[in-house]
Image (cartoon, rainbow, N blue to C red; front, side, top):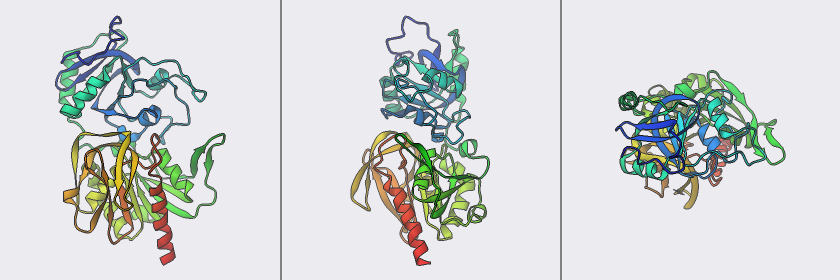
Length: 397
């Protein structure tokens, strides 16, 4: 299907960008952002807003994001809506694919245009693509390995690009948490953004949480701070001894990219010890998957993954349905879970596991992103649930 995913709107302009899939499919378009090339896995995201937050989410390391919503970049970017803690560094995502050309920013909060921002962060973009056709391809065949390239002169060695895309091993067995985690331990006290005020500070914390950073997002840390927590962030490689040495009231296991089984080689032993300490533990996304492995379960690679801000999930503990933000290509296999682990949440799209808890300890996790950013705030209650477990343990002595 060479070139069939190319859309009208750029046909009179010579292509300056290409997306070459591992099977040899070539999709042409107009290159934007950074120049060069990057090999990655291609996924699609169905969110209608929040492209800046999506492209700064460290969980997208090793991926090229295809946006199904056609108008991306129309409100520009600003310095407040970043989700990676490393605000000044390059983004973990390797590329993005868009349908329409980028327009001038039309929002009072914008500080620069989207194209310039992409270039500054080292992200290669491609516009003028029939993203509906590409999304259908992913739905039918799964998330392909590919290479995205941008060259202003429009000259590409397609044979070499095809070979490079085909040779890339993919995300299975790949530990990417080490690429996006913090280099050292640090403290966090910033609270969430409020209209007319911006971000605040937590000056009177009641609890101390250690957050293990496998690729953590800023809004997670802000929501913990909002709930009276002083947060100590430690690198993904922190041992249980190092985590517990901070004398936390609870431990948070963050989101992150890559294969949970690969990162779990060093993270799972630490998680097992932390669970064994009796402390409240809350995990999301990659943290959820590795907690599941630590509790005796297994993870599997998904066909097309879940990426978007409109995913319905049922909470069996309350009977309620919440609309959630998701970003994952691996999932916990519910059939592998031991008897002491209870499934708490399930996807209403495909029935896959979206949450677990231990029946006899204050330990739980969810597959999706309760902090949203972008996305609905239906799941903020989970942070209250975590703090409630911390308070219960303190009361029990």
